Amino acid sequence: MTISTIQIREETKKTLLSMKLHPRETYEEVIERMIEDLSQLNEETIKEIEEARKEIESGRFVTHEQLKKALDL
Image (cartoon, rainbow, N blue to C red; front, side, top):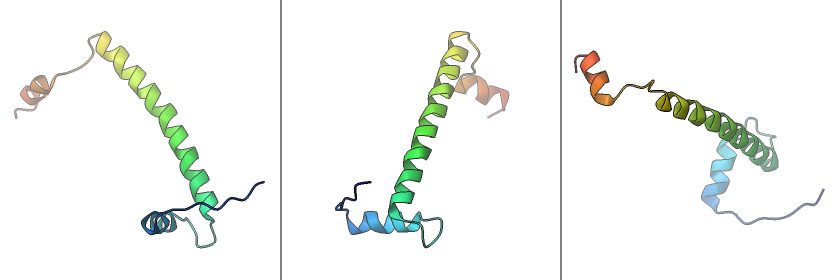
């Protein structure tokens, strides 16, 4: 494993510090968790977008106007 020093703004460091799950968690662990969460979110989001497109293409959607009318707004 290679250890590198990086430069970050103090504000970024404070944000990373606030994201720690426990005081002994390293910044490396925080960043790894963020990367993992982001990749999972992207996969899930892509699937949801694909499903939404299929629904729209098949006509299974409601416009804002239709929803307002249905809710008496």
